[in-house]
Length: 157
Picture 1 (cartoon, rainbow, N blue to C red):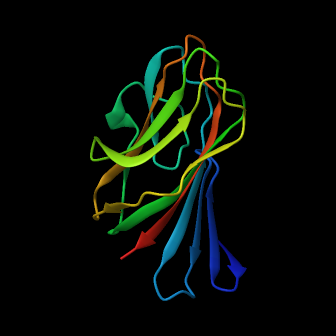
Picture 2: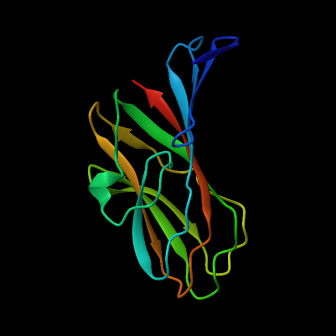
Picture 3: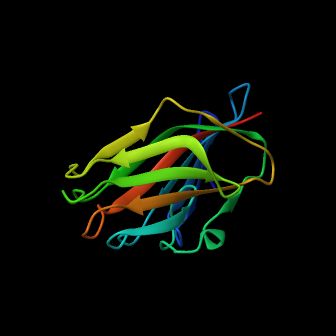
């Protein structure tokens, strides 16, 4: 952990590409979770990732869930892709809470260019110990856009 000044701390886990930024100067603790994905989603498949990305995709959800340490809410969610989504189908990523879909959904449309995709309209409440992760469905008949990173704001209650 490294202090960045002005109440900001930076924690980087190089093994899974996870970063945690926290502002202790605010009245309510707020954290930004940032992580990277390191492989493509295969043709016409469903894969799972940790809440902030990191590690490889897995076809079994229980291997790709983060236990949330404190109650709070998740919102302002971004997905950055490194390649275009094939024109044959979309890529839909849904944030999952305790193995159930939430309202937070990011869709890369068929033929969508590499870039930023967001869900800035929804907020999901979490309790301490809840499991959080992503389910991404590639509806294309080719390998999905490379999901380079996920990021989201996590506000503690």
